[in-house]
Image (cartoon, rainbow, N blue to C red):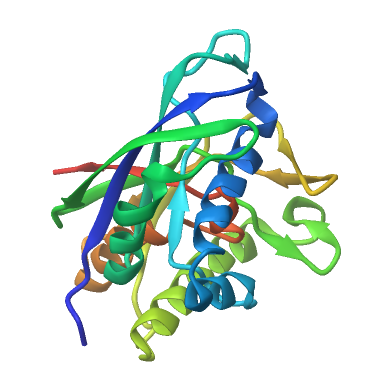
Length: 233
């Protein structure tokens, strides 16, 4: 099995229009989608219903009024576990644009693996049930289990393996929002949460926590959801 590495890219962009905070992730996704669509293999990959193995956050620096301004430059962090995809981003993303965003420069580094105390979502984690938002349909224990199961599925899919799931992933899960967070995607509102997870000490938990930095937590990571940062020891 190949060695797990997390590739982090800092993309500098110039805004051609004002973009509200609630629409920022969708606007960034359109920029990345446009770049991927130019490569036949990646176009097919993008359109398949499968894990995409990358995630990204919103514009930085944050605007106090929630409006990212036309004519200003912001940074976006894009991460992936996929070296080939990372190389494509480095070669192509800095030349991309949409009617709202013009990419300028991109820089890449590898996040070194170290012991992780906790991971915490920067963008909301989305976990859907057949009836919608989880709080109306699942217990907290089921919600916690769904996070771990989803992450294991991504890992198994990427490495074409099957993990022994008899391990503890975390010791504590905390919610960082007082009420559910709604963000628009394709004319619907997705409901999510921001969470902090304290990672267990065992090797498999640490491996999955590191993996999550490049894959994201939960669903729809290629639309900007479930992007996590971490605190190491």
